[in-house]
Structures are given as structure tokens and as C-alpha cells.
Length: 205
Image (cartoon, rainbow, N blue to C red; front, side, top):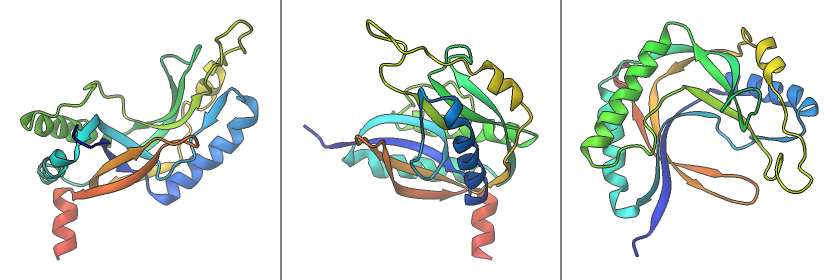
């Protein structure tokens, strides 16, 4: 049986924005004890999750990311607002969202990534795209069992932070990551970094 690794393509969140996201997590944690707050680094925006990819196909996936990145120019996008999946009233995932003019460029980059992955027969497990950075997940067992702990309602928190923003970030590359699941949470290793067109041109200047 071929060896595989859990693989996804993402955009890293820069340290200045990540620091403010961490401060928000610490602020929210006492009022939402049912959540396990993400402490894996770096924070990232997932463009495509591929699941288990055989080692022999990783080079092709990395080259696909490079082709997608070369087709798009570097851009800026704002991290703004909070949300939850599937809905704030009964959340399983809490996240920070994206807004501003850069959202259109972000959607175009996602389309390019998906198109290139399809060309090599490796489409993402889910092509729907709600750009976000995961901040926390509902702890296992909450809201279940014979005497379930009450699931939280994040409606008020989401409403209070609708305009909250840790700042803007430049998107200059796509990163191909491997993900290893551990009892403490997933750990990530970068397999390849694919510069966007203008970022690559600047680095060669």
C-alpha cells in the first residue's frame, strides 16, 4: 500500500495578524469553555484540502500549486469579522473571515488552484470556498452523550465582532502543507512554497 500524507494548499497569515488573532482567542476562551482553541502554527487560510496523497504524487501537486500561483498577482486582503460553521447558534468551528476589495482576487486564486488540481486528477475534497482562518473547534463530546454538556451559542459574540479586524495582509505565495494528526492537534510541514506572479518578479529584481 502506497504511503500517503494528508495534504492541503493554503495561505499563511503573517505574524502581526496572527498575534492579534491569538489575543482574541485568549479573550474569548473564558466565555466559551466548550471550545478547543487552535494553537497550531501558522494560522492559515485553506485554499484546497486534498486528504491523503501518495508520496509519489506530491511533486505533481506542488507543481500544480506553482502554476496556479504564477497565474495570479500578489494582492492585499483584510481579515475582518467572526463567523461559525455550520451556524453561530450551534457552532462546531469558530473562525475569522475576510473582506475588502482583495476578496475578489482571493476567489480568483482559489479558482486557479482548483482548476490546476483538477488537471492533474487531484480535485479538492470540497470545492466550496468561504475564506476563513479557523480559531477554535467544539470539544469532542460536547452536546452529546447521556448527559451532554450544553453546546455554546456564539450568536452574540459573532454580532459583537462583525466589524472587528486584526488588520490587512499581503498574499504573496501559496504553500503546500502536509498535516500530521496528534493528540495535541495537527502539526504542519511546508512541502513547497509557490510565489504569486508579482511577488516572484519582486524577489528576482
